[in-house]
Image (cartoon, rainbow, N blue to C red; front, side, top):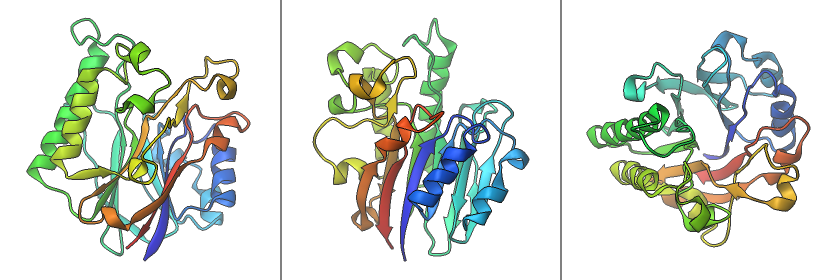
Length: 262
């Protein structure tokens, strides 16, 4: 069963419902994973999505903060939700398709502005969240699974606009990258995006602070698509849909796509 999947930090699904609908109409992924929905589940505007064929949803919501949802044209059932680091945040939801593929949708904490857990509680929470992800996958090794989301880490030198300048900036510090890599190894996860696009600068996020984000192009690749080793060969056609960052009232993230033949 071939299908196309997209992941997108939407930064409020209700505020940005028009551009979610635009993406669904124009690009028509079979599955769309959203992060930072900032909405209780019962307030997610499902009517418009369902009218386009996205009649299935699994989600965890939170008023004004966090929140994750998976919209699907394909039949899907909920397959769990974890509260890593005991934060009480809606940061993970999993759905299972009829072909047995489990899709994990994560929104990893951003980690604040200072890369030091002794003075910045949020940075410590981020590291603890990643540690719990690692331990969970070690305890229950995933199979036939896809993991997507805003993981808030740009791991490679070519995932940021300037590696040396960002080494002490939250999202690209060595300690975060080490935690990121441990999560990957713990679940036999493989970077689908970089398997398809192995070389060159690649970003999925551009700050709102940039007056002309497109020209400045000081981005980071914070949004990821992974697959377990048993299905990694089925993945193809990865892309970052950069155009969406320039739409009216955009998210500061662009959607990331991948297709699977399973």
